[in-house]
Length: 181
Image 1 (spheres, rainbow, N blue to C red):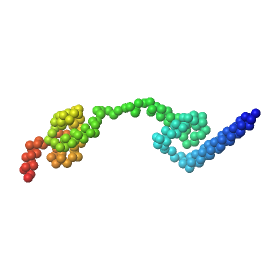
Image 2: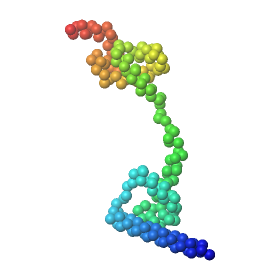
Image 3: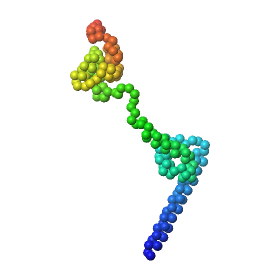
Image 4: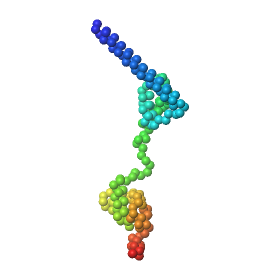
C-alpha cells in the first residue's frame, strides 16, 4: 500500500499548482481591467502581428473561456480575426502574379542600357540584334522598356536624344559638333 501516499502527494501537488495558476490568471485579469480603466473609451489599435498572435491564442482557448477572460476585445472579434487568418491562408493570394508582361532580368536590362549608352545612334532593332548575337532572347519592346532608363545618362542628355526614339541623326550630330567648334 505504499502507492496510496504517493498518489495522495501527487494530488496535493497538482491541486497546489492549479491554485497557483488560478491566482496568476486572476492577477492578470485584474491587471487588464485596471489598464482598460486607464485607457478609458479610447480604442486599442493593434497591428497585424498582434492581431494574429491574439487570434491564434484565442482560438485554442475557445469562445466560452474567452468570454470569461476577455475584457479588452470581445471573443467574437478575436474569433473573427482567426477566421480571416484561415481564409487568407487559402485564398491563393500568395500565388497571384502582377498583371502584364514580367520584367526582363536585371543583368539583361543592364546590358541593354550599356549597349545603348555606348552607341547612342543605335535604334531598337540594332540593339535587339546585338543582344541576340550575344545569345539572349529579347524583343524590341523589351529593349525599348530597358532603354527608357537612359534618361538619366549624360550621353543621351548632351545629344538631346530622348530615350523613346532618336531625334537627331548621327550625321546631323556630327555637323552640329563641327559647327560648334
